[in-house]
Length: 291
Ligand code: NAD
Image (cartoon, rainbow, N blue to C red):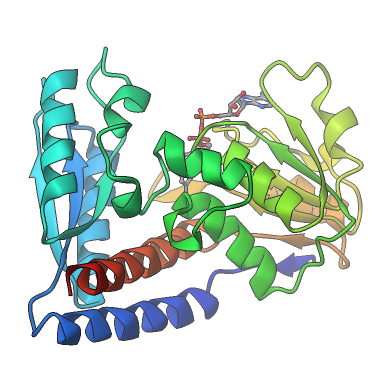
């Protein structure tokens, strides 16, 4: 069996660090917690469940959460106005804009109203550009991309000079992961929905990150023995979730010298921990700037 790159105990350590930073920020603010705002404009059950969990996580590290529900018919102008108001609110440290948005609303356009320093899930153009040129602030990275890197760091997977492949090139996962792997010294290739033969691109990978949003897309024939595979995918399956990787065939192909992150228990919980850390760091930054 390959190594199982589980989030725990590392995610717990990151959450403990977030709790410490949040406590410091609240003490410096004379006991008043800065707020983390989560903006929603959807009624999708999975999304609402995610937001509930997120707000619980914010409160578990000691920070105040603010749920801003704009309704499923919110217009682009209304979402822009709400994000602009939160951006200039002196007590709001971090802003998370939950997907999906109402049809016709451009995520890119509304994200422009988020103050880059409060963009704790790294969705603004400014923070994406800073990542692309390597001048980013770690606390403003897209949380899922940062979580992939945390898992690789936690299990001491060497990256420098190694062939790495990212399947998927979305603005929130695939692209930022590719940039971060490159910054860590890996030789990075990206596969996407137009890639003619996925296996030709993925088999040379010693590190493979899969964020395609297609259940079981990567199978045993797509990987080489000894590779480390990080599965970002989330797909409901009965009362559990499965990923973008077909775990059974991939585990068999990787062998004992390889590694695979589990779903559930891998990127998901690591992402929650990283987002909590970003929230705490934003709270500390806000309190420092206000002083
Ligand atoms: P997305 O739909 O925005 O992007 C998917 C990308 O995969 C696209 O670039 C597309 O070109 C590529 N792709 C699609 N089909 C492909 C194929 N057959 N071969 C190669 N590439 C293909 O998705 P996303 O938002 O990046 O999310 C990807 C997955 O990660 C989803 O399953 C999502 O639920 C999951 N996700 C998990 C977390 C987490 O915290 N664990 C966070 C965000 C997203």
